[in-house]
Image (cartoon, one colour):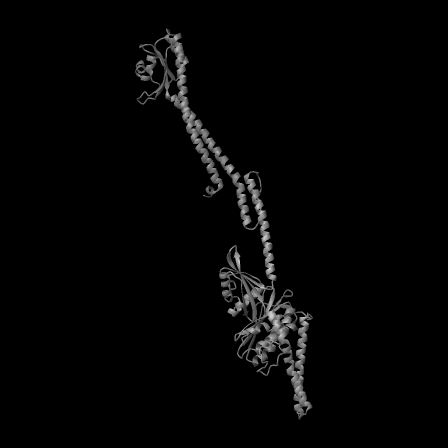
Length: 595
């Protein structure tokens, strides 16, 4: 079936059918022509024989034996001659054909056609059927030259039929040879034509796979050769245009990745088609907001917070803008329709994170107030207790020592505040020095967990380490990273309720190791999330501690932790919900291969 559906089979069958049809018509015409030709030739030959016999009769009229012998020499051995003179018995020559009957005078006289020779002296040619199942005969007659009478020559039709059969065999043999040669030629021609087409089909399949260097060999300069040249030219043009498209795609992708603003492209159904890293941060925050247990929520569909904006843009075909807050970060979103010629095929949203601008505005307003507030309390206490000592309000030595101890503690607090401010200033100026070492991470974390185990037990908090995967040695500054873990774990325990748990989780991916400190405390308000890594940030606005066992913090710990992580080329982030807990996560790329 595959052969008949191929071009070879169709072309071969068409040529063969056409040649067979022509040969059939030609064979029928030739057979008809030769059959008539043989009859006419036989009649002409017999008539010539009758004329010669008539001449012989004129010459040997009185000598019958000589006449018959001469007649036998003149005529064809398979035929028979009858010489009729008046109503006497005719002279009949012998014939080599046993099946040829002897016709008497009465037969010639009674036959309507042959009688005209005797009566009118006209030549006659006819084919007679003798009946009785005998073979028909061809009869010709001609009158004698100078006397009454006629010469009749006849022969059996078997002779003519044998000649026709021989001619038919030759015609059919020639037709058969022609069909065989045509079959071979048609098949050869078909394969010659279709071989380049097969090459082109294979080349087209290669092009479909992206092999644009595929070339079709050009063996002829006819239409098929021109088609192969056009195919090769098409391959080169396709390669050029595909490369141009890839370059433009890479260029567009690079532009999107390097943009500070987020870009999300949606189709008409609201599915996310393209998003760059800043936009991915928005989608991650949205996923956490709607499914805090897993951040791997479906990020290929339109966020519900943008549904109304998207519908307005698709329906009205106008640019729209919205401002919203997500996980404490402020986003300004501008959405415009995307057109396919005149039809809206989707929308593109540009997301600008305005948190940093607002953070700077807030910092300008709060920095002086925060520093003033932090310094005012210890300075007031120093001033008050020193006046008490100067004014001899403390009478006993124990009272004076107690007042001096308070003054000492507050001076240490001022010194700690100033040192931390200096540390932050040095870090932000790029003067931080890292003393990197190869540290086995699990014992390192176990030591930190043990340091906080006593404090955790006092507050009835379950503190434990969870390591996912196998870790060996990592390269980092152990003192600085311990400072980060200390600050995060201390904050987690401080803001956890009795009976809750704090998890320190360590995991890794292909390029970085990831540490998380997760608590189930009362969380951080959404409006405070953007500012947790800023100087002097404190979750309790009153700056009071109910638990007297903890020293008052300066509000600089997370700012220092952020600078340390960034000095290791890492990133730190926070996710939180009120009354559900807080998770601080920092990621540090592998400096070297793990040992």
